[in-house]
Image 1 (tube, helix red, strand yellow):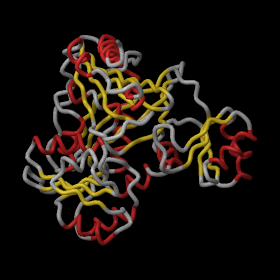
Image 2: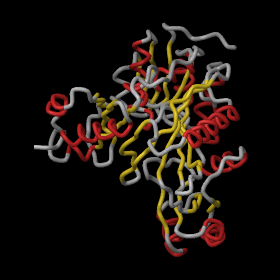
Image 3: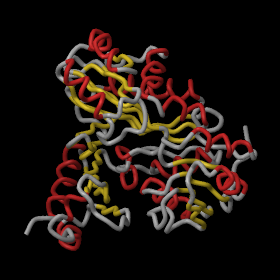
Length: 383
C-alpha cells in the first residue's frame, strides 16, 4: 500500500466549481492545503484554495508546474483532457482516479461497452459517426431514441430525443456532426444512483441506492435510501458499482446512474468518477460525507463510516431560476424550516438551469425527508 498523504499535505484539484469547493471545505477542516487549476478565475473552489492557478488545461507547462507544487491530484469533473493528466503523471504525481478511468468515463460509447463487458445491462445503443450510419443505428435501438455526443455532455447538454429517422439526421447536424451514440428510449419506472468510494488498497464503501427525480434533464430531487427499491435491487446496484470500480482500479469516489424498469430490471446509464449531485445528502445525512470520503481515498487514508444519521435524507436542488424575481427569501426558509440545511455555492451570477445550491433534509423516513426538502425550497419563493 502506498504511503498516506497526511494532514498538512497539498491536494491539487483540477476544476474549480462547486464540487471542488465542497472538497476544499472538507480538506480545510482536516488540515490539508488546496491548490486548484482551472481556466476560470474567481471561482467557488478558487476562493477557498491556497492557490488558484488560472490557465488552459492545454498549457502543459503550467500543468506540470502545478503538479510539482502538490502531493496528489484529483478532479471535480471528468472532462479534463487526457494530455493534462499525462503531463501531471510525467512529473511523478499521482492523479486519482487515474487516466484509465477518465478514458472510459469521457466517452459514452466506451462507457456503455465497458458496462456490457462486465455483464451489466444497459439500454440498447449503437454508434453514430456519420449521417449515413443513422439508419443502421436505429435498427439496433428502435425509436424513439436519444442521440448523444460521445463526450462533454451533462445535465441534458449534448443530446436530443428523436422519434423518426429524419429527426435523428437533423439532430446529428445540430449536435455538430461529431461522433455520437444512439441510445434506445427506456420507459423506466424511476431513476437511481449509487455513490461509492474505493481506497488505494481496494477497500470499498457505499451510500446505498438512492432515487433521483429530474426536471428538464437536470437533477431536481434525490431521496435516500430509494423508497421503491427492494433489498435485492439495491444490492444488485451496489454490486454492479463495485464491479465497475474494481475493474477500473478506481481510487476515489464514483457514481453510477441507473434506470429501473417497471419490471424491476436494472440498467446502467452512465458513471461519473467524482462526487455527484445525488450524493449531496451525505453532507448532513451520513457520518462521513462523500467529499470527506473522496479526500480519504485520494490521500490513502482508511475510508469513513457511511451510516446514515437518520433513516431518511433528501436534497432539493436550487437552480438559477429561483433568482428570476430577485433574491430568494433565505431568512424565511431558515426560520420556518430550522432543520433544513442550506448549501450555496457562491456563484456570482444566477442563470436559468444553473446549479446555485441545494437544501438537505433528514427525517425518520425517506418520504418525510423528501417532503421536508421540497417544502423548504418552496418557502424560498412563497410570499
